[in-house]
Length: 636
Image (tube, rainbow, N blue to C red; front, side, top):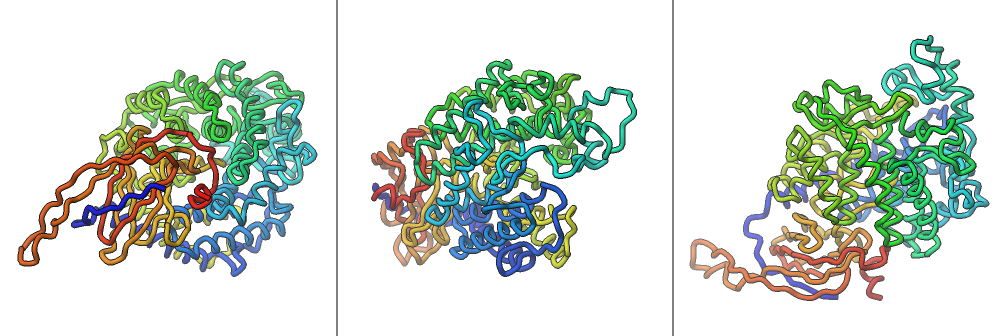
């Protein structure tokens, strides 16, 4: 493995480096407090109630989803065993509540299962030896037709609700779907054509759109949300390297891609048990469970399609699967309008008002998120995380051009950083992209400051709500007060976006390993900043803030070592910057540029005490088989 040694002195520590290390310390104290106040000694959450519907298991896992991600970034050594304890505790808790069998959800939709499984994926990446058996066992629920989920003849998952119990009939364990008046007012109803406009709206318990018709039409056959199963299968591929997982992804995601091509580029949201789009919806390509009509439209479809396409592309090496997402995005964007958000028919006012802030009344591009018999509706700003994930994977000009066009059409400044939180622990893709384009130079300091503010707010909320015996309807509190905020760290340290929340796998231009402790993450007192992610010039700055302790770090390109470093260039300082001890001031270091050939996914960097190095890496993307292997396993 090629080794570079830093010798440029850290004379004035960069503000971003100090803020980043302080944030890591803050999050370390935060997860410990959450664990102490909200969890039992076995790791389960303090909850004495029951769960009255199929929903809820994800809410027990989501508060911990990014804790092993923090470990991978460089969190405390004891965070990894704490994560495992919480996973086992919550899995046992869900078994006791009748939601799990064999450590996996018995049967629910993948909008929610994808959310809860992020915890498992990050644990597998952090400790493959301990979690590979589960990765295989869980993925095989879908590869093995005998498990009851997958139909290889029609290339469908046989129901929207599925899991360890196989394809599960219906969409609710109750005669009527548990929909509230408030939800109906916000999102409307599935199967909306069953009650014509102007007809009396029946009570929820008697509404055919929520009762037997919903169970019959939406409770069987494939749903677009099942594309998130691809994340589960790709997780097993990364853990084992077995070709059968890549083959399944090629087959299943490829089937959805063909359906999108046959539908004018827009991915349909439902497939009947006979493999025909619209088979249970009178020929409609829309109207399926968690599909285009109800409840979230593009928000859930975009993420599920991205998980499916990115997983297939990663495992097979074939980026053509990404067209599944590209064409859907382009068709929706083409139907956009320029209006102030305050005049839109958005069903998600709270989220976007927080995102836009004072620009809520500024004309901007709004795209339709939903479609029904009445046409396209529910106009919102584009969810930038999806097109950005495409560009991050490919670096392709066409994917960057899409982002640039969206930025140009926005009526607000993409460089603005607002300290809001959203469900995905994300939402700052736009100012990060502006930074990567070179036009937002103080972004690292501002996003880290926003993360500090959000973590401190959540810790205060954690204190205020500790000790409450939560009713079932309030269990989202746990994720709302999760004090681990990682978006700023993934962007600044890894050069990667936050994970696609509905079941995606982490993207990163670089990751780090502590060479001395032989574990993932930066060593203590080391800060890292990725300021460019172009394949021909990925720029990484490493700073050893310790003035007394040497550190050694291994830089890996790609979240899974999938890229190759062709060359690495760095500055070296001439000796003598300290000057003579009789002088009153140091000398500015004189720097010279050096470049070395690397030819692999890893580079060792020695960081003597009080030194920094800025690396310019020329990469070949997707040159290696992606894997959870550590650098030591790569070189074995």
